[in-house]
Image (cartoon, rainbow, N blue to C red; front, top):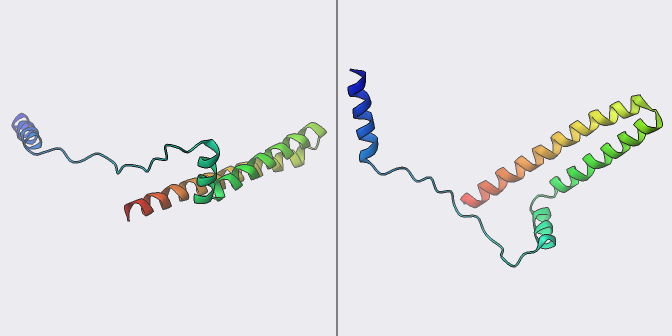
Length: 105
C-alpha cells in the first residue's frame, strides 16, 4: 500500500512543472571599484562600518589594558567587544532585510 502511494505521489510531482527557484537578479555595477563600492555600501547601511570601528576600538583598548596588567578592565573590554560584535551583526542583518524588502517593491 505504501509503495502505491509513493508511486502516485512521485508521478503527481513529475506531472507538473517545477516551481520557480530563481531569485530576483541583483543590480550590478560593472565600472565600480573598491572605493566606490565601499562608499555606496556605507551610504546604504552606515551602522555596519560604525559597528566594525567600535568593535575594533574596544578590542584594541582591551589588548592594551591586558598588556598593562589591568585584567579587570581587559575583561570588561572583551565583554564590551562581544556586545559590539552583536550590535554590528544585528545592523548587518537589518540592512539585509531592508534591502530585500526594498527590492521586492
